[in-house]
Length: 116
Image (cartoon, rainbow, N blue to C red; front, side, top):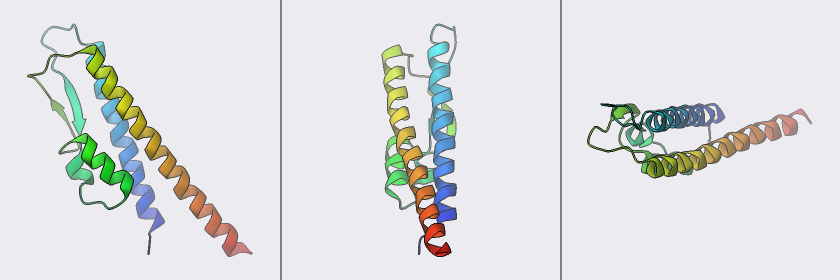
């Protein structure tokens, strides 16, 4: 049996992590000419790796090994790369928000059917 509360919690966590990654990517763009600035990124495949929904599986495959901010000190910040990563992150955000909408719609349907 599917637990809607658990699905909503997982989707909320995914949305939070996607938002954190967007902040990191934005910071990289804003500081690309700052001396000694280290590129940052969020990776969280281990966080979502044990999940079974398609959204979480996709996020785990795309985002990397852990839900932490990591310095990628060896990498030079390239605006095109950062913008590309932001676009990918935006697509993942869209997928997660659609998943949340679907969960809410399912719950409304159950409530409406149950009240008749």
